[in-house]
Length: 384
Image (cartoon, rainbow, N blue to C red; front, side, top):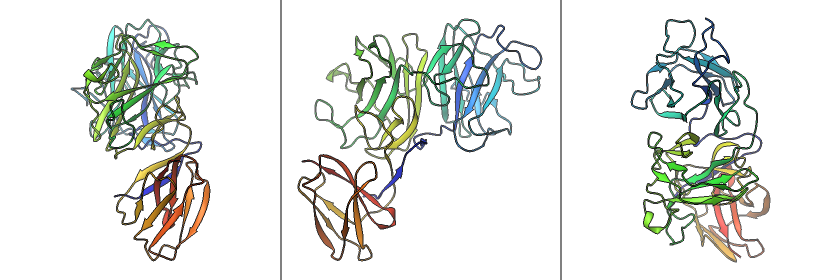
């Protein structure tokens, strides 16, 4: 059993789900006259963005056009301030001053990988048949999905609707949401962030960056501002929304691609605890946070959940209807509070026994939290 620690997510977003401090923000694989490097050459380039609130040293990161060769280009010691950009020239001319890689890109079909010190994949984009002087850029700096656009070299990409995006997923579902067969399988939620229905026929979903075509969508429509959940259970006989792969909670990719296999959205996760969701906050546009599932509903700012060690306190039944019991109460615990998912205190209870009964019959169905002293929290589900 584990303690639940709550962290309020308000205007800023968490990136506990993955190391998203540094991301690929924009790249141009067919630069003919958009912008020249310091020697006047119109070479391909990539723009990286510091998505964190702290300064970041790029020493130890790598760029490559091959996943099997992650260390092709190693960054020197270079400090990148928060929410700032750095340009790397993809020109195979390492003798030039500045950041020049030992590989080029092909506009017809190519991929670009960003790796960390341990050669774990941090970010990825694949593009296909890119016209001259057109960028592959995120629709929102640092967290938006990729699309072709006019270049915004070394400056913000703006903030536009993302289209269909990976909105949420659960990589270790043991008793959260069940599929239509009552099975607790991992799942991935897509969201249509536009005002028009979009047909996904021919699009792809995968759990491996270099195997984009693992699952090909059938004739499936997502209505405007609506969700679509797919079950990562490796059981395609259960229906066309059941994927031919499972998710590894220790580490796995989530890749969503167009019919030409160009990247729309890419994320990864690592060491995800059971029944913890990874979702965009705010819905559709934000970066990722760990928290409670908002299955097929809006990922509004909410109380984020991070789990830690040991728990001796017994709370039952959970889910509950009219009453909930607490046993093995530590004699150092003087009171508890009942909170809703926004962190609002609904009731206070003074403790002077090792077992108490709490009446919850007046509360609506939903997720609540019992707040102990020392900022220890326990999730309870009330069904009325």
